Length: 302
Image (cartoon, rainbow, N blue to C red; front, side, top):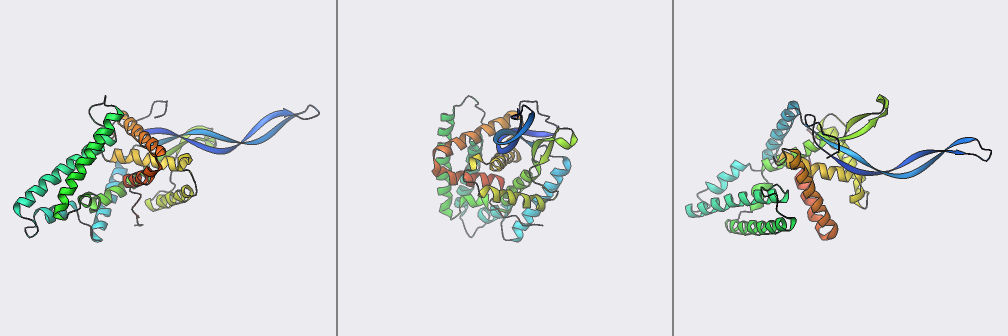
């Protein structure tokens, strides 16, 4: 978060991202005859840019809820099942499972939901025990992953892919697209507005008033990022990555205070450091970020 106290009535959170660019610098000097002259030089400059995540208005919540409902309907129309449909299919289908099997399936499915939630809490470092070390947290994460895999293996006895129960419902798809909606509408950049006397001002990261226009702007940014060999030094890539992660946690109900945002931001930095140490983790890391933000799903224009 920025050093100045954040106006939490207007903003959810803020953070700084370094940006490298070429700046024209003017220097005063003297010519051979001793006359004062101004020399212009170009030099590479790195400065921190403040990124602000806007606190949504009531109107924005209404618009996003409508967007979510539309996307759920689109998913159903295109053949995706809803959570209630899956429950009915796998819990009430007498022709598929015996009563004992249905009971066992429901128990294990419930345990899986709990363990998945535990994993998310640990991953974002939001557990009740704040004194836990990073090493202890990683051990707990490993244990939880093992328990989740064991539960999935049991559920596969019924030819049910446990991940499908989460990731491929109409609601899950719409929720990921909603994360994208928040990313496009809530991410702002702080700058000096010279036209207004050099005062601090804020502009949207993605230009446009409608979702489709902002999505077009996002795609242009993605094209620029794709041309950069090292994403870790790309300003726009860093902004999207951090904003996506933080807003996904917020949208999931895991960021209600500034302290929550700080813990989630710290968690992201820890994960990125691990990726820098082991390049084999890059693909998994990229997929996780995309899943959080809904960026792996092509979103059609309305």
